[in-house]
Structure formats: C-alpha cells, structure tokens
Amino acid sequence: MTSITNRTADIARDAILGIMVVRNETLRLPFVLDYYRDLGVSHFLIVDNDSDDGTTAFLAQQRDVSLWVTQASYKASRFGMDWATWLLMHYGKDKWCLTVDADELLVYPDIKTRNLRDLCLFLDQNQIPALGAFMLDLYPQGPINSVSYEAGQDPREVLTHFDPGPYHAQRQKPRDNLWLQGGVRERVFFADNPNQGPTLNKLPLVKWNWRYAYINSTHSLLPPKLNALYDGPSDPRLTGVLLHTKFLPCAIEKSAEEKTRKQHFRNPNAFQEYYESIVEGPDLFGDVSVKYEGPAQLESLGLMSRGAWAS
Image (tube, rainbow, N blue to C red):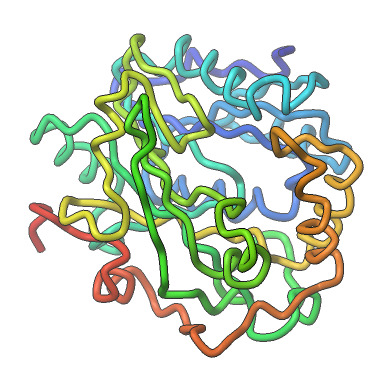
C-alpha cells in the first residue's frame, strides 16, 4: 500500500475509527462518509484498490480521511482483509473501530437519539468487545435498472424494500463462527443451491486489540470466542443491522466488471451465473417484500434487538 494522505496524527485517543477498502465508489462515498460522520466516526482509514473513477482524488480531499492506494489483488489480500488488518493493527489499538464496505449502513436501536459514542460507552460499561450485525439487502420496487441514483443521495430513497425472512444459521467448526444465510439473494439467485448464497452475519464494530484478527471479511474473528458475541437475528442481546445497498443501478456495471476481474470469491467461476443475472437488471421484488420504514421496524420484526440497551 502507498500512502496518499496520512492524517493519522489527528486521531484523538478516544476516536472512533472507520475502516474501509473501496474500489470505484464515487457514487456512494459522498453519502456514506457523511452518514458515519453524523453517527460519530472521528476519522476514516481507507484503502483504495486501483480505482479509475475519481475515487482517489475525492478521498484525498477529505480532511478526516487517511488514504492508501494499492493495485494489488483484492482476492490475494484475503478480499481486502490483509490491508484492513494492517490499518487496525497500526492505528486501532484500544479504539472502537467500525469496519464496513461503502455499501453498508449500520443501524441499531435508538439510532436517532443515541450516536456511536453512546453505543460504544454502553459496550465498554458492559465489557462487550464487539457488536454483531445482520447484513440486510435492500432493493427497489421493480428492476434494479428502473431507478436512478445520484451521488450524495440517501440510497434508502431508492432501495425501498427488503425480505423479512426466512433466514437460517448454523455454527461452523473449528472456530464456532456463525454462518447466516437467506433473504432476497437466496430467494432470487441461489434457490437451487442455498449453500452458495452469501454469508450475512458480521461483527463490524470492535474495540480493537492487537490479539484480534478478522478471518473471513468481517464475518468472523479470532480469537474464536469473539464469534460467540453474535447469534444472528434471533439474538436477544444488543445487535445491529447493516443495510446493504448493493442493488443500486451501478450494480449492473460492477457485476459486469467482476465477471472479468474474478476478485470477489474463492472460486469465482462458480458465480458467473450470479453476475450474469445481475447484469440483466433483475426485479428482486416479490410476494414477501416489505417496505423499509426504519430501525424500529427491524427491531419489531426480530431482525435486531436492544438487549439491555434501555430506551
């Protein structure tokens, strides 16, 4: 990685850090950075993986972003986790670190009145080192290429619906990491082979310790005991949801590119049909689709919980 703008000297001792690995995200970044700024992220540590759409220049201009670039293989870096882990090891020690993709918006109970600093204080007081979250795919009502989206716009204005279920989970040995699947991508793309569907559980918010390491994206952590901190949507403890905004119209162009780049799966040839389906601009709306109304709705549906996080 090559440093472009290193503003890490500005990181305060009690800073909440946002860590991202991005590629060609000029469309999403204006909103997602403001979203997390408003929520309480103090400084962003971002790796730009060979963007050619102006992402590098945009990020270099952001006063709260420290930026690195690399042209190396995303797949060979454990899908960006080696780069993110380097940042976490160097700058995240004893700090709350939120590791997310540019298409993920974290929500949790009472988010409108309590920011990330309130949330992290609660977790500290209860000696909870990480927050588990469920990745929930949002999609439009109609084909994904039938809507329009502009940089800086809230993607929830365009991606209006989601699947409330079914979802299913199991524990995997030897690390006891959760494997949560289901929802719209299983319903539309992997109905005949559900085991091939994406993993939906994540541990994105962590009080970072030098002994920790992400294994499979942010789906699982070492040491293995950290994976017990999240049991999926039915978990009665305080949990969150990562609203996944993948299915903006730009997903068509990105999927066409990934068919050639083959950087997002260990066996990318097995997912060519998946990419081809997205390139066709599918209509993900179905009989089970529910309009997204906000975090309180997700809590009432049992997709996240407040646990001991009192009202």
